Image (cartoon, rainbow, N blue to C red):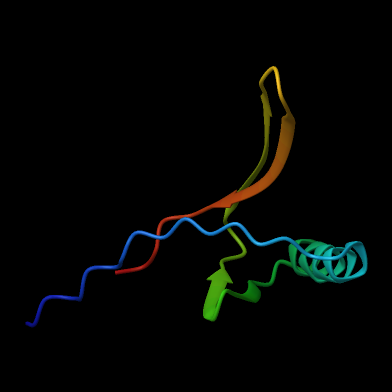
Length: 78
């Protein structure tokens, strides 16, 4: 059986205008409520977040700034 290609490391941050961000949050909330996977394209790559992904928040603080991240984590299927 051929080995599956290795996935490349990726760390992308993308900023959106408030209106576009709200649209994405609404689509995400609808998928979470309905138990459906969430599909989004980020920097040219399509990403599917499964319905069973772990959802969390992260808060970081330094002397210069603060950051809140909405996170979804899952293990990709082999």
